[in-house]
Amino acid sequence: MTDETRTETGHRVLPHTADVIVEAWASTRSGCLEELVRGVVETFADTRHAAATREVPVEVGAARDEDVVVALLDDVCYLLDADGLVVVDVALEEEDEDGNFDGMFFVAPVDAVVQTGAVPKGVSRSQLQFASDGPRWRGRVLVDL
Image 1 (cartoon, one colour):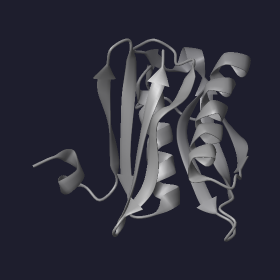
Image 2 (cartoon, helix red, strand yellow; image 1 turned 180 degrees about the vertical axis):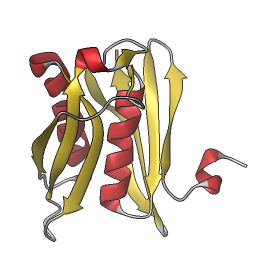
Image 3 (cartoon, one colour; image 1 turned 90 degrees about the horizontal axis):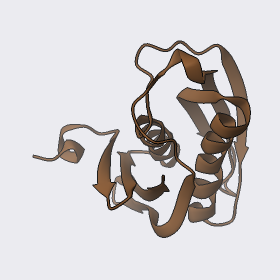
Image 4 (cartoon, helix red, strand yellow; image 1 turned 60 degrees about the vertical axis):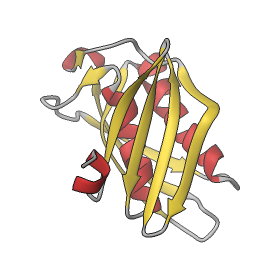
């Protein structure tokens, strides 16, 4: 039995040469995006005991799902690199039929989390997947370290 069959929503991190792969699944498009965010953060930080100290509004919109994924995960990397903030949780909502999302990143300073791996440089478009698969959405990204 795989992780995917045990839980309706989740993610996993898999090794890949010098990078990592994050796979996510959920019953909704926004839920799958949230799990991708959590998975990317898990590649470099343990946030289980970190409390969010701020909320950062998120707005992501693009014509293609792949562009939404890249923009959202690039925002996660940008917050870390530019502001020293780690996303400890995320809440997204699809705001219209155009595929736009708004929501919130719940963040903490980088020194409030335990670093467990290399900080990601970004998300590669290579091997990126994001689509519905029957009743479930699935996403897969290659995280550049």
